[in-house]
Image (spheres, each protein chain N blue to C red):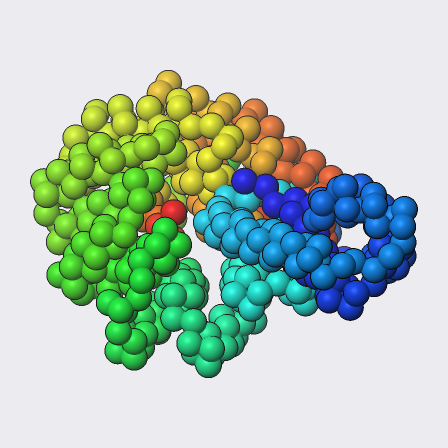
Length: 416
Length: 42
């Protein structure tokens, strides 16, 4: 879902107009003040009244004023509500966003006249955006400040989401224990059972428990992680169920109980609602079969993933799948369609924020080229990377690309 | 910055002139594929 500047203007304009109406200006004065055309005003007000008032130029009478105010209140309320949904959609997809125009729009919104709830949501999104750009400290501070405000204003439901986000940043940074502390602070301080459940709070609860369980699993508290995943499952919507079972399977993989893990993956597969989630589970099943020593089955799954992935999926995931594909097929040029990698390379700058995936992918290709003595493909790859560096206008992205090229150079030099 | 650009030119030059029989130290290449854990849960 795309957030348009029209949607944003709608809310701030509506609020502005409400202020003007309270001041009892004439229509002419409204139009001068707002610099609207009468047709723009029609979006908010009754068109017939606008015509009448424009012609007569008199002040709005009390009843009309009341109708306008109510209508505006509804519009603002609905628009704020819709805006809330937009924010959650963006937060949901922020890692997969290739086009950052929408998110950049957010940077300019913080001082607009949104409700405090939506203003804080914008801050949460901004924090994640900053983190993805490498401003780790700033992102953590922003989220901690949001939590302070929420605590002061006693907006408990949003504390769940913000803590989920804070925990997520700890996951990304690898500071799992600090992440667990954040979750447990909230669990100890608030009685979450008293919160009313609606579609929005359900999402907040899901994010909170899911990410808490993730931290617990990485801290080797596997039983507690499973119990927490059960809670996440209570709040998961049909698109999220597979993710819970996937993590459940991973708790068993940690104990090397591969049969149970396989069963959990099968449940996850049944819960998948889209191709992207199905391919994720197939990738993990391929990994599981490698562990079990059934390479043929592992290859079948990973080949299916590569032949079915498309551009709508996040690039870092596709890079990882390709990495698995090369390795599970044992760098065998007869089994690998290496030219698929060129398409991924063309978009490589869209995976920034996930450099580990990029360098793993590049190294796997490097290894493939070396084993198969495929200098032709290595040349194609380098030329593409070089072309990317030359054509990238964004200075930060260009530096990151150069860094990657330099790391590849180091790898090559090790072997020369 | 200048140093970096020189280094980059070197990278490209080396790549484009690599001898076809160059040996890459495979032992130092680690397996990098990972399970998709989906930490965000989305």
